[in-house]
Length: 257
Ligand SMILES: NC(=O)c1ccc[n+]([C@@H]2O[C@H](COP(=O)([O-])OP(=O)(O)OC[C@H]3O[C@@H](n4cnc5c(N)ncnc54)[C@H](O)[C@@H]3O)[C@@H](O)[C@H]2O)c1
Image 1: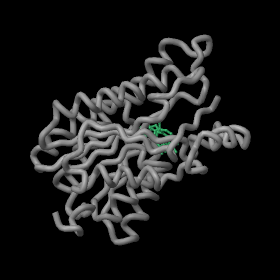
Image 2 (image 1 turned 45 degrees about the vertical axis):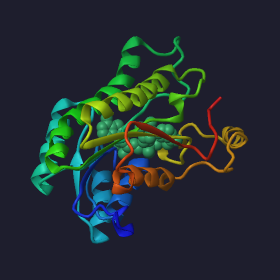
Image 3 (image 1 turned 90 degrees about the vertical axis):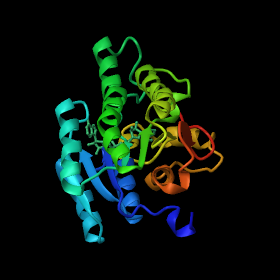
């Protein structure tokens, strides 16, 4: 492979769920910077439009789509709209996820709430893989990147639903790599604490200080730190990498406790 081809995404189409803000938005901009056409799928259509506009204003191609990943009809429509706009599909960033925040003690949440975390973080991801895979096979190129978390391997209080759903993502990724190979590669990224709106809801100066005491690189993550890993897995440079979970965490771990 020529050096210029390693990260070249020209002609590739990417769907990024939760692409309107945070890590998803940075991933959209990163993939577009390297030539991909990007579908920004998000609950918040106005925010998704802003991300798509930033890409088109910089000379790229993007489409904003309203999508709640927990609704099957939205996922089906997302893939349909992608194909109608760009004629193919090569990259899927399954970025949406939520829960945790130290609020999942067994005396705090119900079984229905526990199930909803899995619905949001795991079932939607599995289903979107199923919907996208045939089109990636048809295109002859496929890379699926699932957003996990350091919570998938950490042990902490009051985070059992989020943490176990993220652990499920790691193992689902490793197993689906067999089901969808050889054309499609599946990998997961496990971010540590990354400065986004989601983190801001729980971060205090005291918590940050404790986190940095366990972080060799002595800072919290920025969204581009994760988008860089997304680019690596999306691009031809990682063409013999599948079934892996890459933790991007400043070399340490950042927990809320
Ligand atoms: N920020 C962190 O420190 C951190 C750490 C580990 C893992 N993660 C993971 O990274 C991913 C992104 O997190 P973030 O911090 O960037 O979040 P964020 O809250 O900054 O952004 C999430 C985006 O997803 C959208 N969204 C939420 N629910 C949706 C749904 N049902 N359907 C479609 N869109 C939906 C929101 O509108 C928003 O635009 C998540 O999977 C999260 O678990 C984040």
